[in-house]
Amino acid sequence: MRDPSIHLPRRRFVQGLGLAGVGLGFGVARPAFATAVMEPPADQGREAMLEIREAAVDFTGRSRRAVTVNGGVPGPTLRWREGDDVVLRVSNHLDVASSIHWHGLIVPADQDGVPGLSFDGIPARGDFTYRFAVKQSGTYWYHAHSRFQEQSGLYGAIVIEPRDGDRHRCDRDHVLLLSDWTDEDPERVYAKLRSRADVYNYGQPTLGDLRRDAREKGLGEALAMRRMWNRMRMNPTDLADVSGATYTYLVNGRTPTGNWTGLFRPGERVRLRLVNGSSNSIFDLRIPGLRMRVVAADGQDVEPVEVDELRLSAAETYDVIVEPTEDRAYTVFAQSIDRSGYARATLAPRVGMSAAVPPLDPRPRLSMRDMMGSMSGGGDMVMANHARTEYGPGVDMRVDMPRTNLDDPGVGLRERPHRVLTYADLHTPGGATDRREPARTIELHLTGNMERFAWSFDGVKYSSAKPIHFRQGERLRLRLVNDTMMNHPIHLHGMWSELESPDGAFQVRKHTVNVQPAQQVTYAVTADNPGRWAFHCHMLYHMEAGMFREVVVS
Image (cartoon, rainbow, N blue to C red):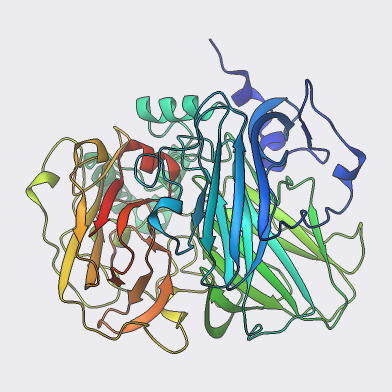
């Protein structure tokens, strides 16, 4: 049976409706306020009731079912203060079990919200109460950890005010929660990827590309490059598994046409809390006409750095400060890494104003450094150690000399004329919280077979893997080597990941570390939180396909 959703006009998917709606009953409500500037979601206090239920939504002109929190996509922004003891009573009105994970929060293992590890899940038509102390501040988010409920809408932002006041006082404070929505059933999206991994890649190399390469490099070299990619059964345009072919990209639940707007007065300092709450998308974000001062990464303060553009991998957050002085509107433009669509918002002095929306950049192509590592990239050359388990049908690529250059912004951003944020720019003030040298190193390879849409660590998918054991209290180092041509944002639950520079010096504290194709990164971990923890790629479909491990701290 033909899937009607993928035959809708592509423009409708890319830009969505200006009049999206959410309805809790039959049909879809399209309230008048949907066309007005959206007020910040109702904040929840230290004690809150969260209700998970299905509702009809309409982002593209077709009514679809979403999994909502308190009737919204996204759910309400939760606002707490560092030191609070919070109580969250969650009522699950679905016919299946559900869950909420507090992404980036250091909480006891039984409050982390991962079914099968942290707890049994929130039963269908049942309740669960989360209780934990808030020991940190910053910008975070929450999401389901149950199959594809996150893709269906179960996510929201968290803002935690510092106990002793903010290091960077601002006049305005806006949350911009980016996400991706598909009208297709996420189970069907996953099934399609499993049967044909490039089904959403509408940017396959063409005869026209070959002619262009021949003009630029000569016919012989162009044919040689094409043969090399074909021989490896890889594709230089494999940038995103799921694209604007089915995704509509949202900011705070608004489509690009819906245009979420945040207000300011000229001359004010405005903090933007950027959250990539998408299931499977990476965004490159800029605000034409404004520089961004990055002051926090993954909720943790960093030494301020001025940039014109930054990449938000899935699950990462950045706080930036902008200072618009002119009485005009500015577009917040976040295009997907494969340039198949974009999320859009507006900063403006008054309601109803807008600014020009930049065109999408040309689709970038992966290069040899994204395949071979340090042969063409910067950084010191290192040799990887491949486990025997990598030599099997689940692995179609191994990188022997991964690059370690943290100053690489990644494919599509390398040739920018303006300043682009890289991990090398990020420095946590005060250094590491634990100054001990890691006593041991665990090397893991991020592996996969693109054609089979098989993803794993060391060639072993989660269902066949044994847990990784950390000794409680130890300081250890994780070395991650990306043997694939895809970006993998790796998230360790329950503990901080303290990213190291190529020479082993502490760099920045994060909860999610994006590992670029053919790159190696290392970070130190203090195993100070006992329990069973999830460790996985935050590309939802990669995680479901097997790039997931259990970490046991005992």
